[in-house]
Image (tube, rainbow, N blue to C red; front, side, top):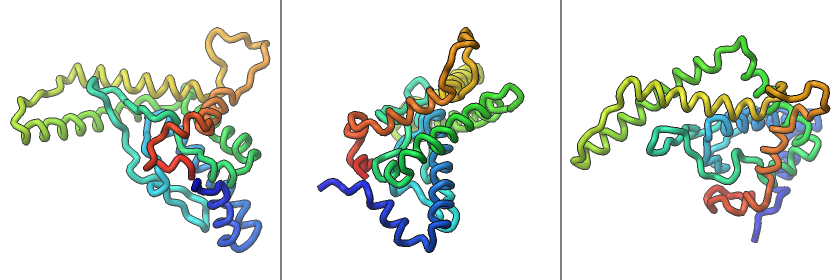
Length: 222
């Protein structure tokens, strides 16, 4: 049968010593998973199965294992998963609706808004990351081609710069969609929901129609 949505909640209720510990852990763990969701959506990171998510019961800190991007044949970020990050039934039940709509969504929007501030150096950090990661991926691909006897194909510096800029722009665009900042062309006098972008992603992550399309090894029912 399907795993109950209360498994994680019951485990935490029975192992944490006091209500104060439970409240602190729940808030911190919810914030950590929200920041992970921002990173997963921005960098198109998938494969967030339960065995790749570790957490500390004494603090609520979360650690993501095997967190790396995947590129298509053109060298651009690729992720074909129907959901952008992991927020399944057990996590939703443990965080409660107040935690999901309050802490989780607010943390996502706040983190995205901080990343979109004009004075930060996010673009430079992403550029350095993609430069090294694309070069490493190209080297691994060349090694496989050499082992198979295929003709090696190098990556010109101009091509590398183009790929880096394209991936950075994609990431910034996705981050901007989550941020509460005023969008260009919007009417400043019209009422808007600053968390609309993050709330939409959370709604998509909780959608049963999307979760049922995930791979069985992702454990979408847990």
